[in-house]
Image (tube, rainbow, N blue to C red; front, side):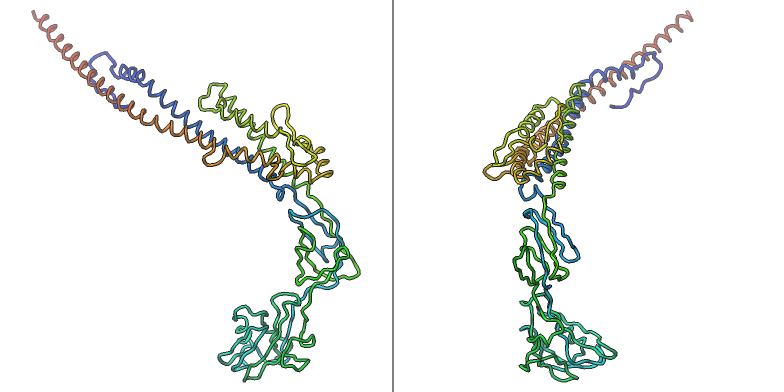
Length: 455
C-alpha cells in the first residue's frame, strides 16, 4: 500500500518500520471489512450449493411423484423369435397367450414384361401410369430405371418402384406397397406408350392390374392372431393396443403354438428410484451436518446456524414422516421400507419394500404419487421443495441477498482504501520532513563541534 519512505540514511531512526507499523494498525478496520465481505460471498456460494443439493433431491422425488413414472413394467415372451413384447408405464400385470395365424404383408406387383437392361433400353416414350390413384406422367422417353425414378419422385405414391434383375439380360419393374395390410393394397392402370413397353398382370381382363391375387407376387394381407382366444386383425405386424400398455411385434406365424407373454411389475426399477431418493437425501443431510460442524468451529462463512437451513431440515423430516390418506392400504413411507436411521439419515429396508410391492404394488404407487385431490408422499415433498428451489424461491433469494450485501461492502472498502492511501502519503511527508530536519541539525552540530575544537 504505497511506496516506502525515501530517507537520507544518515539518522538512526527506521521511519519505514514506523510507517509500516502505523499503517498496519490503522488498516485493521479495512481487513475486518474485507473478511466480512469474503464471508458473505462464501455464504452466498454455500447457499447456491445447497440449492443444487435440494434440486437433486427434488428431481429424485419427482421421479416417484407421478403414477405414470413410479412403476415400470416388463413384458417377457416365451418365444422372442415368434412374438416379442415390450411394456410401458400404463401396462397391466397379467399373462397373455398369443397365437399368430398370419402376418401382415405388403402388396408386391412385378411387371410381366422384361427389358434386356435397366439403363439404356427405352421402355416408354410417353403416356401415364396410375398407381393407387396417383398418376405419373412421362414427359419423354424413359428407361426402366428412369421410369422407377419418376414413380418414386411423385408426391406420396402408395408404392415404391425398384428395378430387379430376374435373370440374364432380364430386368423387371417391381412395385411394393409402402405399408402392410389390405387397406394399403393398390391397383395399376397402365397407359404408357412407345418404347418396348411395360405391362402388368390382369387376370380378370378388366384393364386394371393388381386387383386380383394372380396379378401380384405378394398379395396384401392383414396380420391375424388371437390373444387369450380373442380374434384380432391388424394391418401391421406391430400392435400397440391389443394388450393395454404393451407393444407386440409379430415375426413368425405359427397357428399351432401359443406364445406366452407375461407382464409383471418391474420392482427393480422402482427400487432404484427409491434408492436414488435416499442417496440424495443423505447427501443433503451430510452437507448440512458439515455446515453445522464448521459453524461450531467459528467459521463465519458457513450457514450451519442459519435459520433457513434448520427450517428446511425440519420441514423435510416432517413431510417424509407424515401420514398420507391416498386411498392406499399404506399411509406412511416406513410401511414401504423407507426409514430414518438413528443418525438422521435414511435407509431402505429391502425386505419390507419387496413385500409391499409384491402384495400391493398399486397401493405403493398411491402412497408415493396419490392424486390431485390427495397428493401422495413424494408429490407433497416435491411441492414443498418448490418453495426453496424456484427462481424466486428461498434458497436463490438467500444467495442473492448475501451477494448484494457483499457488493455494498465493496464501496466501503474502496473508500477506506482511499483514506488509508491519503493517510500514508501524509505520514510519508511528515517523516521525510523530520528526517531532513534531523539531518540539518546533525550537520549543524558537527560544524559547532569542529568550531569548538579549533577554539
